[in-house]
Length: 361
Image (tube, rainbow, N blue to C red; front, side, top):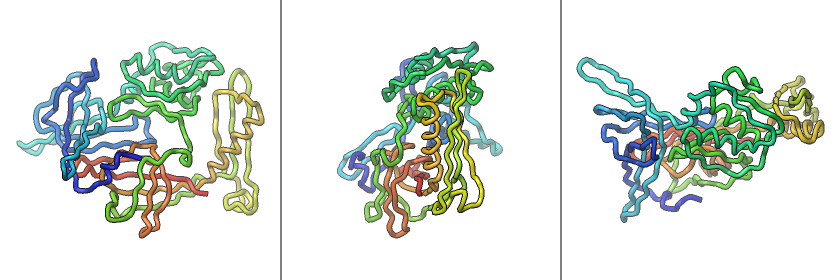
């Protein structure tokens, strides 16, 4: 669990906008003309995070980065200073109202640099290459720092990336697409950024297996607001899964059905097939049995009803993909969830609008 100091109430919140040297990675001074704004983090977008802040004067950042820092101080003098994000700035927009004007500076996370860049000539990854090391190399060659879980996963065949030269047509042609493809082979999440602007590679874990980063508890010290939305989405539930593996001139198809009359979403219960398909560019090591087993696993996962809770809370040290628990007995909202999105408003207390997600059967 997180530092207990964050459970306290009535902190005084201040923000700093700091210039970060692209060449050294060091903080080189405050940017006094920036004020307020918001930060958005979304696990379902490739660039993952972006921000928008107000500009109240002349701004020239050159090629440097912007880091947003927050300090909170509690009665008695105890305080914490944390980075909320490190961003690539783009030219500010200016809203003109006669003689009066205001400006907004758009910021994106450093994954934008990988998303904007592509290979002028084909890049080949040989069979037997460690996929996470190859993804790290792409980032580090661009001057990005990487923090990664270890992996021994290697490619089973040659893979080619580049504009118009991809060995897998389902993969995009940017460097970020290449990195995420390689991470997917290793069973990792797509690349993320941490608040210091480092690229993070993390091994995927089922929600049930993740440690709880924060417990939201109803009561006098609750950190969340009472109004929230609790939604259950059954639109993606399937009763038939097909997994197609292609590579080295071969094709293996795994398949699984739910025909159980006692199952709410089986072909018998709904009277029709609801199919989901998955394609893989690596052949399964275990052949047909492994392909069928993967289809059966995905069928079980695909029959989970998605539960989404949208809630508001003051800042606590929780990141997207983290597991949290919510116990709100008055509203009958209880469970373990993963954080899917966050919007941080840079105001007193750092108000956070978050979407939590879980799967129920």
